[in-house]
Image 1 (cartoon, rainbow, N blue to C red):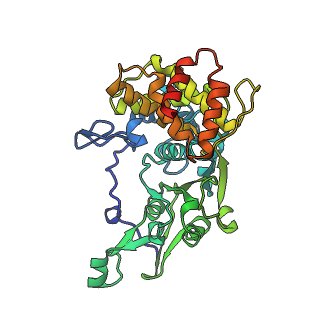
Image 2 (cartoon, helix red, strand yellow):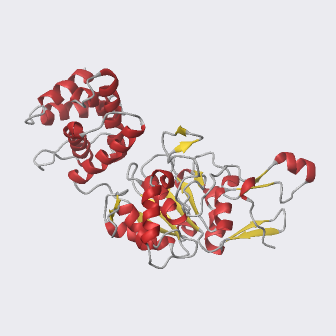
Image 3 (spheres, helix red, strand yellow):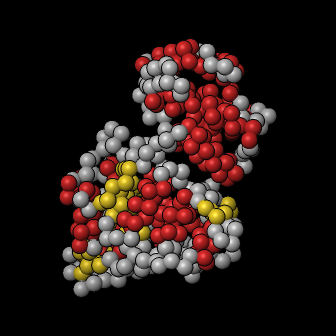
Length: 394
């Protein structure tokens, strides 16, 4: 027997979805909740205008229950200009083929695994894919070492369970179960942090497209449009490798670090501008030099060689990812706004760089000091940056 899933029983409340699946609920501004602006609106709210414009001009075939065609989903992520002049801002800066393969995977019966080192925008891409495909990115399971099986399958309302025993009313569907029943996209973040026995709960779901409910003698069968996006990285300690049986159910797409310094500067600038606007921080072209310096430092320490290829340097223990560069610059903007003149300067980013680089107080501090003296000190136009870094490193 197949059971339907009532969305009102979900442990996580979902926002009311309008007919298009993209615009926010009537009477609410994008990124708002009951009139109050939220710090980080969901992708489908923050970019509702772009999604609506794409849907209006998208005349290509769409898979069942998709809000956009695969071509339009890729355009939403990579950016472009529509025939009516609407500019779609890029959400991901990287090889186009990677995005095309990811979108195509979701149009098949295979799940998508976004793999990469920390800070390669796996979660960001996952959220925007779900927003463009289903108009809802909130069907999310956050993986941790303590994630239980119920987070992927289903749980129970124990008051109902004790009063009436196992019943349909006592069932609390997981985000994955709801996605199956409604033909939506579910997301599982940090899949390799979930215990191995809980990970394997996904095997039946992904292979049979069915979630049994043995307590009720029923099952939930996935309907057209159901897909699952998982993210994982193999850099952090304490991760749980995927079983070969589970890995076969995924099509794996590896998200690389930005290929060039300019591409990384562009990514950091865009994200800092978006975050800065939500926090009412000053943003502008004045800070681009400091962004470029932060990116240069991170890339050189990450790669173990200076940008010109002439000097080898030691790499610290941290990942020094693009995400960490965004965090350093955002924190610097806050310092400039609240304790400076509003213009991002070397002294505003120096402390953040030190915190990102020196994770091991003994080994990393030596590496950082050596880099300052052999590379930064000798670089033309970097004297003020060198002095600021020396001051916070003393």
